[in-house]
Amino acid sequence: MAELTAVLASTHHPFYYKATTSPEDQRPPYAADWQRKVEAYRETLTAAEPDILVMVGADHFHQLWLDNYPQFLIGKQERCDATFYNEEREFGIPKYTLAGDIELSRYMHQELLGKDFDFSVSHELKIDHSIICPIITVRPEADLPIVPIYTNIFVPPLPSPRRFYQVGRAIREIIDSFPSDKKVAAIGTGHLSLELGGPRQFGEHGPDPLFDADAIKWLSTGNIDAILANVTHESMAGAGNATHGFMDLLLMMGVAGPGVHADYVDHLDLFHTREMYMTWYPNKTQDQLDAAARAAATAQASTGPIYATDPAWEKFRVNQEQA
Amino acid sequence: MSKYYVNKFLFTIDRDPEWVASYREDPRATVARWEKEIGSWLNPVEQTSWLEFTQEEREALCTHDYVWLFEHGAHFFLNLTLFIALFDEEYAAAKGPLAFQTEMAQKLGHWTGRDYPSVAM
Image (tube, rainbow over the protein chains, first blue to last red):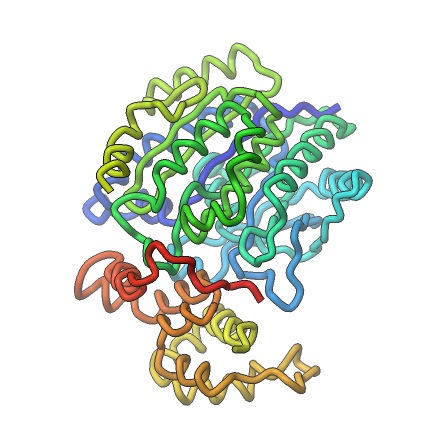
C-alpha cells in the first residue's frame, strides 16, 4: 500500500512570491524573516520524500463559478496548468504546468464516492494560488505529480466544519489503502482569521489574533471536539469575513487524525494576517523528526503543539481586556 | 437586487485584461457593452431571457461604487479584487503599498462590529 509520509496544513499567502523574489531594495521589511520560516518549513516536506502530492485548496472565483458551483471537487487529468491572468496581475505569481497523478485521482474519486462523499470532478481544472502558493513555498521545483482537491469556502451555504473534517478522514483512509508503493504527502492550505474586502482588511494584525491562538492550539493537538464545539460558520465570520478558509486546515487535521499532535508548528504575524505552518508525520521516522528539529531551530518553531497560553498571544489579550 | 448578475459582472470583467482596462477608463459605456456582449449570454449560443440589473445596481457599477456593492451583498472577494485591479497601482504610486486597500477598509469602517450584508443568494 502507499505510505502517507507527511501531512501539511498551512496558510497560503499570494504576496510571498513577490516579497521574496523582488530586488533586495524593493522587498518589504518582513520578507527576510518570512523567507527564513518558509524555507525551514519546506525541509519538513523534503524529509518525507514524497512521490505524489495530494493538494487541497479552494478556487477563488478563477474557474469555478456561480452558474455551477461544487461543494467538493477533484481534478482528474494528466497535466494541470496553473495561475490565472488576474493572479499574475495582482500578485506576480508565474504560470506553471504540473503533472497530474491520474491513477491516484481516479482511485481517490472512486473511493470517495464509495464512502458516500459525492465529489464533483473536473477534467480541465486550472490550478489557482491556493495550490500554487504551497508549491512555491514547500516544493518550488514543482516536479511532483499532484491530485488537486477543491473545497467550497466561499459560496454560502458552505459544508459544515464537521463535513470538512470527515472528508479529511476519508482522504486519509483512501491514501492508506491506495495499492501502490509510492510515498504520498497531503498538503492543504487555507487561512486563520482573515478579512478580505471588508472594514478589517489589511490592518496592523489579522482581524482576530485570539481566534488564531485557539486555532493553532486545536489543530496542533488534533482537538476535533473543541473545534466542533467552538467553530461555526457564524463564529468564523465574526473572526473575519474570509476566515472560512480555516476549514481547509481542519480538513488536513482530519487527514492527520483525531488527537494526533503535530510534529512541527510555526506561525508568523504578518501585519494583516497570521501565517501558520504545520506538519504531521503519520509514520514517523527518526530522519523526519531530526529534520523537523533542525527546521525548528532555524525558524524558532516548535516540534510539538503551540498552546494558546504561549507568550506570543499575551499582547492581544491585554488589548482585548483594555477594549 | 440581482446579486448573481452583479457578481457575474465583477467576475467576468476581472478575468479579462481588456475588460478591466475598459471598465477603468469608461465604466458607464463598459457596463452597457457588457450587458449586450457578456452578461446576457450563458455560453456563445445560449442567451438568458431574464437576468438584468436593477437601476441602483447599474448605477453603482457605473460609478465604481464598491461601498454600495458591499452593502448590497456583492461577494467580498470579487468586489476587492476587481477594484484593486482598477486602483491599486495609482494609489500605491501616490501613497505607498496597499493604500487603496487601506482606504477601502476605512470607507467600510462603519460596518466594524456589525453583521456584514450577506453574500448568500
